[in-house]
Length: 541
Ligand SMILES: Cc1cc2nc3c(=O)[nH]c(=O)nc-3n(C[C@H](O)[C@H](O)[C@H](O)COP(=O)(O)OP(=O)(O)OC[C@H]3O[C@@H](n4cnc5c(N)ncnc54)[C@H](O)[C@@H]3O)c2cc1C
Ligand SMILES: *[C@@H]1O[C@H](CO)[C@@H](O)[C@H](O)[C@H]1NC(C)=O
Ligand SMILES: *[C@@H]1O[C@H](CO)[C@@H](O)[C@H](O)[C@H]1NC(C)=O
Ligand SMILES: *[C@@H]1O[C@H](CO)[C@@H](O)[C@H](O)[C@H]1NC(C)=O
Ligand SMILES: *[C@@H]1O[C@H](CO)[C@@H](O)[C@H](O)[C@H]1NC(C)=O
Ligand SMILES: *[C@@H]1O[C@H](CO)[C@@H](O)[C@H](O)[C@H]1NC(C)=O
Ligand SMILES: CC(=O)N[C@H]1CO[C@H](CO)[C@@H](O)[C@@H]1O
Image (tube, rainbow, N blue to C red):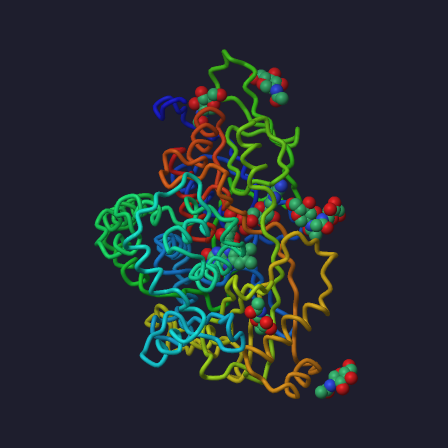
């Protein structure tokens, strides 16, 4: 491996090709352009229609109803959220007026789980008062809890090399009740995949290290972790330097955002990619080519004596000094065997059917269930992964910067009638093709059953709702979406030994390719991929 010192600088006025125009690509372009405004950057986007953002997609129906077809929440706790928000405000200060949030104490921050012992009874987690605590303890969710706690504290089992989340939890807690009844649901909510198929090193590297250090994750969690607070400060200072803003300013914003469970945009998540794209496309040296499907990448290293940078060829057609793979197509043909085998081992991402539901004048969600929504643990043995109560979130949003926002009530930006229902259901469709899915069956199995069972609407009323022409049900098949971060791929809790770090270095220093997106970031979320873009762009400078 070559050292960083040998890294040639990208030539003046050099050309950079970027695969994809999702949020990773857009932010990579932004960060690179800040440092190197001379570079000519071309984004290559497979889709023919002129839309950036990839999975991020806010759709407005012909009746102006806003539906999120992909992600909808930024978490303030994730340091990448501060990077996103500071960057966006820098691009366009008017973004401040678009930012909304949900407070920790809001109904929209409550979460429920389905109890396998009584699937019609949603149980709030974590229980926040005595009566909720008793309800939790009586439910199937708390099965084996006390035993699990003791087992974690007193058992001295050692971690195996590449454990799944499931195996880790079983080893720590002595049996699989806690993971099946509670923990699995959280993983469904984030990865849409079973805990047995997820690498512990990938998903929770900090917990793996806590166990190594303290022999117990509970004891480890009780110790104050000062290194991570220091890391956070260092990371914020790095952000500030690149964005050319004051350290103190970015630290203050992080402090403000850190405790906010949900951050969004009044007009939806697409505000994020659109803001970045609008900013970038004002630059004469940045361009997006739509309808360009990258299938092949050839790294030209043929001329050993060439002191100039070798070039990289895409689809035997375009040539660049540097290529950034903001997304890595599963079937990409590239003359780099290690990357190819990594892509093969990741395989196809998970398939999820998203069902958006909307009723303009009826609120189906009872006060006692007002929340972010509910998740379904593995023990329930259902394809339903979870349901998000969008209307509860929207009606609890508040403007983040009210001062710049003369007295606008955020709620008025949404549906004017307060009594409406908007929900998103997520159903696992792994191993299925789009054509295998009968939407009518899914409507019966999932939409109707959820209204009946979890929302506890009387059957006659449910029938009426299902027949109501105002009741909107839309289906989106998310094919090959979140990668399956399986245990044996080479993820390590030690970043320097992780397959991603190793590949990333080799690709960059020996082949002039940088990588990003959720096949390389530290997590699958939007803030994770944007931080990955930030680091990738900085490594080039
Ligand atoms: C259903 C769902 C819900 C989610 N919810 C959340 C959430 O609430 N919070 C959160 O933080 N994250 C969430 N995520 C994750 C989030 O969507 C991702 O982190 C983020 O969108 C990844 O962006 P990206 O730019 O890396 O990739 P993508 O969004 O996949 O963008 C890649 C782009 O590249 C294009 N492309 C692909 N192949 C080629 C090719 N061969 N040639 C040219 N172009 C190509 C694609 O068309 C696309 O535009 C969710 C993901 C999904 C699927
Ligand atoms: C590789 O580069 C050499 C010269 O630098 C050129 O002659 C050759 O055509 C290139 N090959 C490809 C596949 O681009
Ligand atoms: C899962 O929950 C549904 C209700 O949504 C219920 O009908 C089903 O019986 C439950 N399955 C198990 C195995 O608990
Ligand atoms: C999906 O469809 C493709 C061809 O369209 C087929 O090769 C594949 O086997 C199908 N997969 C499943 C799980 O049905
Ligand atoms: C709903 O519509 C179906 C036919 O589409 C009809 O058979 C049924 O009686 C209707 N139910 C209600 C409650 O209106
Ligand atoms: C789903 O993704 C796979 C792998 O990327 C692809 O081969 C297939 O054509 C896609 N199917 C649909 C319906 O888009
Ligand atoms: C900028 C960059 O990464 N340059 C590298 C391109 O690849 C050659 C080897 O093929 C390296 O020597 C350069 O450092």
